[in-house]
Amino acid sequence: MANKRDFLIYKLSETIKSTSRIDKELFTQLNVKRGLRNEDHSGVVAGLTKVGDVVGYERQAEGSVKAIPGKLFYRGIDVEDLVHGLNAEDRLGFEETAFLLLSGYLPDAEELRQFSLMLNESMALDTKMTMSIIEIQGQDIMNILARSVLEMYTYDKNPDDISRDNLIRQSIDLISKFPTIIAYAYNILRHSQQGRSLHIRHPKEGASVAENFLYMMKGPGNYSDLDIKLIDLCLILHAEHGGGNNSTFSVRVTSSTLTDTYSAIAAGIGSLKGPLHGGANIKVNQMFDHLKIAIKKWDDVKEIDAYLQKMLNKEAYNKTGLIYGIGHAVYTISDPRSILLKEMARKLAIEKGIEKEYNFLELLDERAVNAFMTFKGDDINKQVCTNVDFYSGFVYEAMGLPTEVYTPLFAMSRITGWTAHRIEELNFASKRIIRPAYKNVGDKKPFVPITKR
Image (cartoon, rainbow, N blue to C red; front, side, top):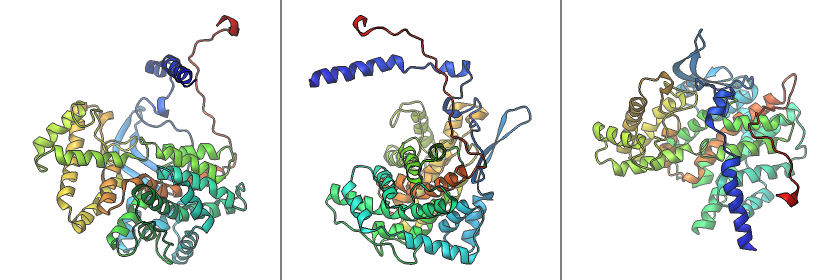
């Protein structure tokens, strides 16, 4: 019986090779936007939003696009201004950013105090949910996070209520509980797979989201003030990226059906888990570890350039022809998140005594962009920049955070954008379920009786 099943699976698999094949040329011939991308690589406009804005090019009068330095706006506020403003006042800013994205305006001091207090008070998990995470276990924290979010439905007294007040309540609860779920899930994973002691630390009263995450992950005395500032910065920079990024779009599509908040957010988590979306910084770190060995002289530009060209020619590293952390779907000349993170990454490298590694990474940043441009030639559409993933993995590793939490950390930040977009989707004056069209290009066939097949 097992052999028959294996044969059937094999036969189905072989059949799918032909039945699921669609020639790339058909997309152009039928004017279908593959990946919801236009021919000039810009995204197809599929909706309207006031939450975030991602800018990497300007459209010219004749219809072409012109690359410009990248800009990211949260509710109309330039993220560079937001981060530099917080730094000038020597304050953490994730809570303020979450308030801004949810509400549409910057809070005053009392509103920020009350909002931060709500997040802090909602961060603890009750015993049932903690035990549930212990029982779930599993191999991947993103899966544990998704299942935990779906289980939150059962603890919510009004899970299907989509009134604004209830959506805000649910949003605050999700933003506050993500750090706790992720920290607990990792410590349970560490205990079950590595035989390490199991630590379930309750969130610290009055501490920021960034500090509480490090505290629950690593314990008291095992992180610095600069670590807290870097985690806070990463949470700010990953909090929102327009309605068109894959996970946010997933949340909006799901929300448009009027489903519950937890189902919509679980869809976003599933999207973000994909390595083409949320796991890029892990690939950057793996590549960086390889380059530290493959390149003998970390300050030799010629040696670096030669090896990067081999990578692009599919002759070195994993032979995919990719340099991870280089290029972005929207940003061309620069990714503002990468610039902001790079400003503080050096400080962290100095504190941790890995300045030599940072200098090498910074030189790779410069040479990889140059190598890619040389490889592609003068095509303006091939202009690239370093994206935020190029530095975020380095920062997390420098803090001693395990790779298992890199993508969950992304989710811990992006939950703010997801909930803000869900609230917006459900509060349009005229709601409509999102239902794009697919054009069928298969052959029409007659039905054949089973006795004649």
